Amino acid sequence: MEWFTAPELWLGRTVFQRGLAVLYCVAFLSAALQFRALIGERGMLPVPEYLRRTTPLRTPSLFHWRYSDRLFAGVAWSGAALAAALAAGAGDAVPLGAAMALWLALWVLYLSIVNVGQTWYAFGWESLLLETGFLAVFLGNDDVAPPLPVLLLLRWLLFRVEFGAGLIKIRGDACWRKLTCLDHHHETQPMPGPLSWFFHRLPRPLHRVEAAANHVVQLGVPFLLFAPQPVASVAAGLMIVTQLWLVLSGNFAWLNWLTILLAASALDLSALSGDRAAPATPVWYAVLVVALTVLVLVLSRHPVRNLLSRRQVMNRSFDPFHLVNAYGAFGTVGRVRDEIVVEGTSDPAPGPGTEWKEYGFKGKPGDPHRWPRQYAPWHLRLDWLLWFVALSPSYGAAWFDGFVRRLLLNDGDLLKLIRHNPFPDAPPVHVRCRLYRYRFTTWRELRETRDCWHRTYLRDMVPPTRLRTPPGSSAP
Image (cartoon, rainbow, N blue to C red):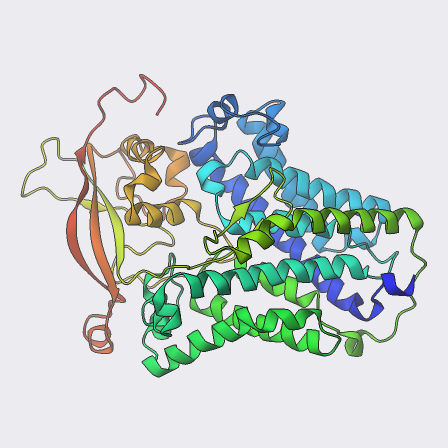
């Protein structure tokens, strides 16, 4: 069975497993602390209503059996606790079969959440976490040496993440071919970080170098993942460096960190861990790994066709279990940044002299003086969706009216997702949403005003709106 194991990757497997458990924990905590206003029984897109429109075959989830907010919270908090235990090493403290069952439980719990999360969970990194988590079930623990077939499947996943992102760029926006996209990207990306202003203000020739390096790492380096060591480790190292650059320049939830962990699984760290005797591989375990390998190879026909297609799509799941998916990011890059500014007033008859107070959000730009914060790998779902609505109101067609109504009610669950509520004592009488164009300030403007952003009013998206029914008359 020497062909089956890769003992030199023992430490790489450990780093990957512990890191994946940490990201699972972050994902479950994010679900537990944000779900009530988003998909809870009285949320903007309630799970019970969604379950009536779908079936267990289309969206496999434990919640088809029964749903309540208490049960959802129990699933999310249980997932977080289990993930924390695995991050602390519980998987290596139990027999192989038990460890696999623990990882499988994590995957089932998170799949149940994603498949009822609707638009709030329609992000590529949700599928990436599920696909990675499913492969982790078969990665083993200290009872067996790292199985080479599963490690190669992780590299195949990393290949699709990177190569898919590279192809969608080359095929998409012409600025990627001209090496000019990064003149805009750091400013217009969904959620800038604390260093994004400085990245945007780098000299333009350096932006060209950034773009060219991105093409090399995403279109060329992924093929080297399947080369012998140490070439595969060098390729993985280059990807890790690139992903850390992205971590510093923006907030993309756990996408970059999960990609780093996938690359870490390919690192030969035997020089740090020393030689380790490889235990005998149980036959039943080898059979399961081979079956997994065959399954993934068969399901890979869909993402391979997508990669070869001129009509390549990003972040597409081809099965309801999110087992083998297509990935990609920033096939187009915005040249300008529009943001929704939400304001409220206690004035019963708003006019030219009305005082409007602005709501503050945690991650999305608002107050021009407030510098962007670092949130990743935490996922601010409301902030992300508000960025999409600024691009096109159609992204909020199903939930945005409910969002405004909850502000008019001072809904406690929604206000937990907002940084600053200017009406702490009583809800506003009117709420309006205005569209502004944002840009990073120049060096001179920053010195003079200390403002990170400059914004210009464009138009009203939602005119002054008040409740049409008394607060207690019906559900939002």
